Amino acid sequence: MSYAHTITMDAPFDEAVRITRAALAEQGFGVLTEIDLHATFTAKLGVEQADAVGDYLILGACNPLLASRAVAADPSIGALLPCNVVVRRAAGASATTVQAIDPAIMVQLSHAPEIKDVAAEADTRLRAALASMLSPR
Image (cartoon, rainbow, N blue to C red; front, side, top):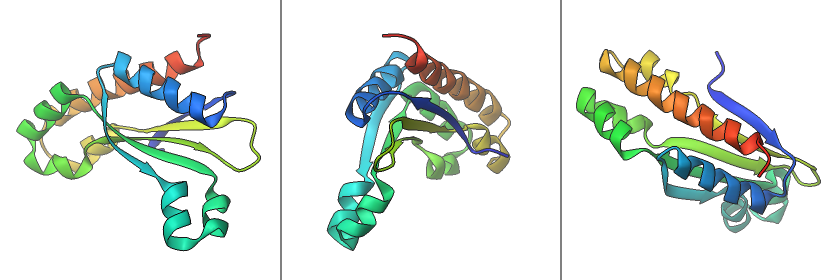
């Protein structure tokens, strides 16, 4: 089973990040966390390791209504929140990849029946965000 939805954009990394944030916001997601792996690897492992991964940003996206429904149904589901969205571009690459976690993973890991509906709505919104990023702007 694939655990992420993936698109490839013909856009520079910084522009892809901007477009990703806007698309997520249009679907009711805010970005709660941001992890710049390139900067972290540079600081902790050195430039060579960081350059091997290229530009790599992990955005912790959260739709508060969906998150509150999920946590109410299964308090342990918080371990799987927020929904991670990755924007990455390998050194020298001409395209930027954007990946969003497939919320169906939550359904497989939780026994609460309400999680299925929350995951389906999150999936619809994440897929819509990704699809909008491929439309001309």
